[in-house]
Amino acid sequence: MLNQEDPAAVLHPLGQDYAQGLHRVFSQQSWTEFRHKFHGTVAHSMRGLRLRAYFERDIWRDAWLQWLWFATGVEADRVGFGRGPLTWMRQYRARSQAKPLHVCLLSLDHSGLPFGPLTAWAINQNSRTCSASLNEGLEHADVIWVYMQDPILPQMRQRLEAMIARHAKPQAVIVNPPRSYNAFHRPDAFALLEAAGVSVPRSVFDESDIGRTHVVYKTVAQQGGDKFLDLYSGPRDGMAPFEFIDSVRPDGTFARYRAHYLFGRARPSEVLLSDHWNSCLKHSVKLEYNFALTDLETEQLGKIAQALDLQYFAVDFLRRPDGSPVFTDVNIYPTIQSPHARVRARGDFGLWHTFDARRRLGLPEPNHVTAWEIFDEAMLKMTASKAGSDTAADVKSSTTR
Image (cartoon, rainbow, N blue to C red; front, side):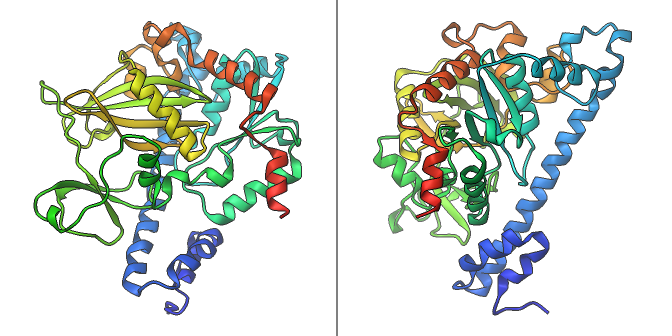
């Protein structure tokens, strides 16, 4: 029988971290509100399992080419990351190359897509200054990059900080430190960004908006949560309202722009065109890589980084009819795997990092600088000066207070 005095106990099947982390959240709330959040947690966990299944599907689709590419007429450099000899040989060659810096990706058990293996592989293949490992070599790392699905529970933050404090070199630089990893999931995140001068959707409404103002209700505290477009009807349990930004273009499609913030530099990624107001991959009809960031948009990314104390993230934003941007989402763990259908359409196979898309398509890079050149420059600068960066020594100091 369910223990109503300790509702978090029902979450034990999902893992002790869930139970302990959510106990304090739910213990003072009504049973009805708990049930809503519990079902949301289960749905979020199921979504994570589904995403992992998609990843496995994509990696096995072209697995046979890892073994038999030479018998098919497919050029070896057309086959990306996978499980098989081609990937293993490339990993072996990468390990034999001496590079001045080492990056350790910390991607402990978490829900969502496992981007760590592909990102580590892409760094090893493309960086001239950095080698990378996944959850290994922490004691030798010059850069420690916390790299997992957000938000993280308090127990996971403590676990990460304990690992860094115990095993890392004191001078190792931390990218997206645990203390600020959940910054965008704070209840006041949009207010914080707005106060920093970032253009975000309005999120405060009153009685005058009821039945008049179109809003998007979004599930709170869930990555990829449900969104509903409706007239404002007041607060809804487990959901937060945001101003609806109409991004429709003259041809009837809706445009969502994505850009990356890479350790101090802003880089345009792609424009996703869809036939639905909620522009996402599920509704996409076209993906374009030929847009440029305006000076204002570049400036806004810098303000987001400073306000949330993050060094790497992606943003999704819309453009109003007058061209001004509105930032709707910050992704500290964004999708970095190019969609399988688009990889096949350009004649490639296997898994590919989105930073390679322009090169694979024969398109010019923004400002003629690749993402990997930005990455290398940033890693050298961060490890040399450490100015404004968290280090393992800072983490150790904070955990021993």
